[in-house]
Length: 264
Image (cartoon, rainbow, N blue to C red; front, top):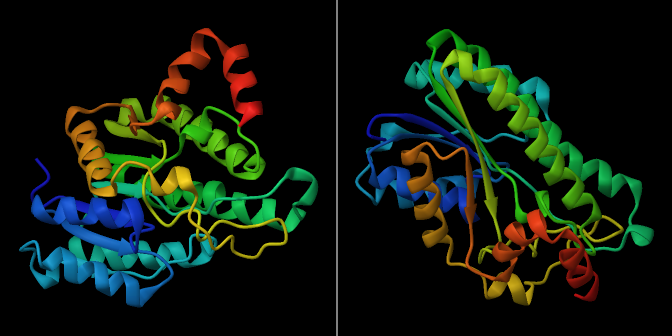
C-alpha cells in the first residue's frame, strides 16, 4: 500500500525517522528526508537505496523546523521533484534532562520551538496541498511524555502534551477533507534522544539513559508504526516497558501513577 507514495519525514537523520525511512524504502515508497545534518541524511539515503529504492526516489532536503520562512521553498522543491505529498511525518524533536528550578527559559523556548511550533508550521505549509488533493496523511511523533508527566522533563512533557492536543484537534478538522491524522506515542525506544537532550543551561546531556538503552529496538518500533499506518490507527502506542502500562493505568488510577512517577 506504500509503493510509489511520497513520504516526507522530518528528523530523518537518525532514530525513529531513520528506521521509518528504511521501512518505507523496502515498501517502494518515494522519500523526502529532512533534518539539519545533510551528511547524516545522505547516509540514511544510502541505507534506503540499499533496500532497492532508486536514487531519484530519495530526495535529501535539509531543513531546520524552527526556520518557518524556509518551509514554502522546501515544499516547492518536494512538489517539483515528486508532484505530490501523500504523507508528512513530523518526527523532529529534542528532549530535556533538567529540573524546572535549574532550567533557563531559553531552554523551554527552544524545546517548544522545535517540538511544537516547528511541527505546526510545517503541517500548516503542507496542509493546503493535501486539501487540494483531497487526500493525505499527517503524522507526528509525540511520546508517553505527552500523556504522563515525569521529573526532569517539564519542558519536554509540556511540549508533547501540546503536540497531542494540537493534532487531536487537527484530526477532527481534517476528517471532512479525507486527510488522516495520526499521533505516535512511543515509550522507551533505543535511540540517541537522551544524548542530544538539553540540560538546564542549554548544553547537551551527552549520555544514554538506562531506560533508553534498554528500550525497544528502533527497527521493531518502526514496524509497529508502519502496521498502525496501514490499519489507519489514529493513535499508535509503541513500546514494551512498564511505561506502556502506565498509559492505561492513568485512565483509571491516576493517583497511583502520580505517586509512582514521583518515586522514580
